[in-house]
Every structure is written in structure tokens, then in C-alpha cells.
Length: 430
Image (cartoon, rainbow, N blue to C red; front, side, top):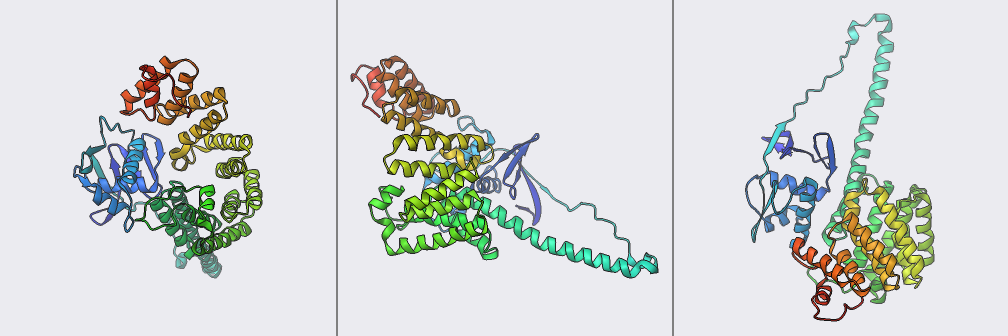
């Protein structure tokens, strides 16, 4: 960020933005901000009170990529969340219907002068002649050590910071974010080819590209983007898919060799092996990841998916529940990665219990999700269906009407509302 060519500190409505660290701070509170969300804030703040069109924002935030308005809307939603901004009574971001968005909060930029005190250096010529030669050697040796540390430290810090940023892109699971993650991982590896986290991240991003977005960006969305669907449709056996997965396997294998006790490296290896149909080997890699880090929630999710593909529904649920508990434990540290999927993942567990006829467990999970994410549409409609089918249509109707009144739609509650109104006898099973 610059102000009249000099580095500056950006403050928006009392929040101070640290673009490099990816944080907003105010009154001693610090909140993490995803890279793309921070870019949006900086972009809006560059022209306060001006209306920035959707097309302009999309072009600036995702240059050279084709993304839909929903990606921008989600980015704005996340920025409002971190700013605690109410879209119905905005204090920061105003939506201009059919045009775009504008920042309405006050913006200030404070130039940052380098006023850090410099250590005093006693000139060598003032030192006693007897100690001069030794002093010069000590100073030169110390300077050499400091130069080596300074030359190494920025590269290490840059590699770690870029990899974390790439990870945040990766975990959004959109085509545009995955491509951005790949670009960042490859940038890290161009300078640090032995950086295990970037090797593992790039391997996973290549697998996701093969599973979810092997088609042209302008082509219609694929009917299924999960592993089972990709295998059933033969998408993983095409020459381009095999070539990409072969590269991913080499990257993941190198990451494991460099960091054999790193759970992320083992998890990346498991993902590649699963995509290649080597399920037993993949399961062993995922188990190693979970043993190395009980909070490796992605490995637990993948173990649950493998169990589901085998038809072992109870084992799958156990893994998914362990994954949810791990996500809960690390939520504060990984909120940018977990938040988009947290509530939906809890709903998935509830739906699985409902499908197995375990209504009580399903109800507990729907209620747990609503305790963490009030008015979550899928959890609300799922709980309402359970209540309606168990003989309490009045409570089900109240849940759904409240949802409609507060968020403007029923989120799948139409059949429950029909039961509450007496138009049908009971809702269909979920």
C-alpha cells in the first residue's frame, strides 16, 4: 500500500490493516483476514466513497481468470464478517444494487517513517591500537554471520508466508482460488525447491484440479467433483490426468522424504494415492498423518470418504465426527480455512445419521450446528423435517417461518411449511 509513493499504514473505520501479516487490529483485538479479502479491502479503500463495479473488482481481484459474481459476493460477505458489518445497516461496505460496492467508512493513511534507533557503532580508529586488529576480525566475522542470517531469513520467511497464503487459497475449493494456490506454490518452489510444505500443497492442488476442474473454464460445471464420481466417469484415467497425478506423486513423495514426520506431507501423499486408485496405500498414509497430528482434520475427512466408498457407513461417521472435533479444536488458528465448510460439514454428519435412521443422533447434530451457526439453512430445514416427521409439525413450522423472516428464504423448508399449513400430510424423507 502506498500513499504519495511512500509506504503507509491503512486505517479503515478504526481498523488498522496489516496487509503483509493479513490482519486487522483495533483496541488490542487482532483478527485474521484471508489474502483475497484483504486485497478487496485495500482495493475499496483506494477509492473511498466511489462505487467500484463488479466487473472492475473481479478483474482486479482475479486478473486473467474467469470467475462468477458469486466469488465476489462471497469475498464481500467474508470482509463484512471480519469487520462486523451489517449489510442491512452498513457502516463499512455499501451494496449498490446492479452496480457494485463502495466503502463508506473513513479511511486514513499514515506515512511510515523509518525512525527506528540505529545501534551506535564505535569507530575502529578510536579503539586502542593493541585491540584494533582483533576488533576488526570480530566485527567482520559478526558481520558475515549477520549477513548470512539476513540473507537466509527473508527467503525463509517469504517461503513460509507465501505457502500459508497459498494454503488459504487452496482451502476455498474454487477453480480460481486453486489456480492462485498453484501459482503461489510454484513461486515458492522456484526459490526453495526443498520447501516441504509447498511441495505438499502443490501436490494437493494438482489433485484437486484433476478431480474438480480438468475441463476448460468456459465449459459447463462437471456433474460430480468428488473422488468416487471422478473414478466412475473415468476422468482420472485420461493421459492428461495420469500425467498430472504422476507429477503430484513425485511432489508429495519428495515432501515426505524431506519431512517424514509432517502430517501435511503424509496427507498430501494419501490424497495423490487415492486419486490413483491405490486406496490401501492411501489409507496407510492418512493414518500416519492422523497419528502424527490428532488435529489433522483433512486426513480424517479423507479416511471417512474412503470408508464411505467401501460402504462402511459407521466407520465413515466415526472418522467424520473425529474430523469435526479436530476442526473445532483448531478453528481459531485456521478459521480462514475451516469457516467456509464448518457448518456444512456438521450438517453432512447429521444427514448421514438421518439417512441411517438414527433420528436422535441426527437431531443432536443439527442442533449442534445451529448452536454454532444460527439460522444455517440446511441445519434448520433438516431439523424441521425431523420434528415434522416425529409428530411436531408446529415446532417445525416455527423454525422454518423464522428462517424465512430473517434471511428471506426457506433454505429447503418449503415442504415443511406445506405440512405446517396443512397442504400435505408429511414431508418427504431428507
